[in-house]
Image (cartoon, rainbow, N blue to C red; front, side, top):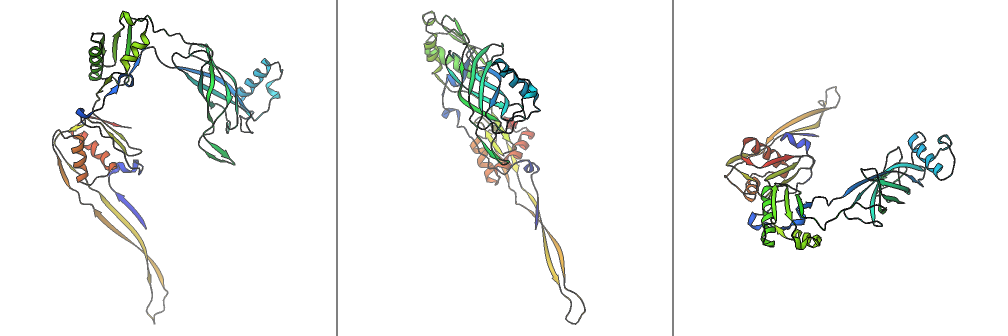
Length: 371
């Protein structure tokens, strides 16, 4: 028996996964968040580090001898250790060339340890059981800021061709020690610049007003939708850290642009609180065609000379689901919109095509983002 359905054409692109909806309450019930969750301080950021190293101790799963750069790297390392060999003399399968990456946090001091990621760059089969040899980690300026070394921890396993999770990337917790600091001085600054993670004029003005009201001085000023300038009072010039602590723990209700985000691959839909629609009528239904193959036995008459044969017959059934037309009034809230769509019996995945149609009609006052 074979079944074929003709319905919403977008369904074939969506995995049968139940969608999750996130609905925010009205603005009066919105929750305030700390300023530190909304902004970053210019200059206070992580820095990327990178290095090239070798992983040894692999059980025959390293790079093949054809990986010339790995063999040359191993020969160079042994040369620095006083062992004179040529790359033609090296035929090993328990060594792999890797790239090592890390993030140097702000205000990190010499001696602190940071986590590192190790990823294969050759044709190794697995890094399981390997140990990273001493590897310098450089910044974009070419200077060494940390030294990495240690045993690899993988999130997968494999044997006899069967693997679980990825075997060519590993992590070493606290695998690098910081050897050089990035200078950053807060005390003495006369101005701090805040940058919003999600630029928005309303949010920027709310942060500015909250800071000025708390300090009872006009020290904060919104320069644009994503930048706020904050002056540092003279009395706080030598204790800027305390000043920042006081500011970043103030609470503000952030504002957002009305947005609906649709993930066609998983069928997930996320709807923001400010989504509104104009008056629109919505109807949704499906046409399905079911094709069934069945066999019937045909027998000859008792006195007739014939043979029993099996006949294959196909029956086709066409069914159209009953669809209802629902009127969604103007300026409907998210709750009203969901109740209206539930009234016509749509599924979360059907909502994707419905939202696209409402947007095309010009009745959806929100950004429709499809990822």
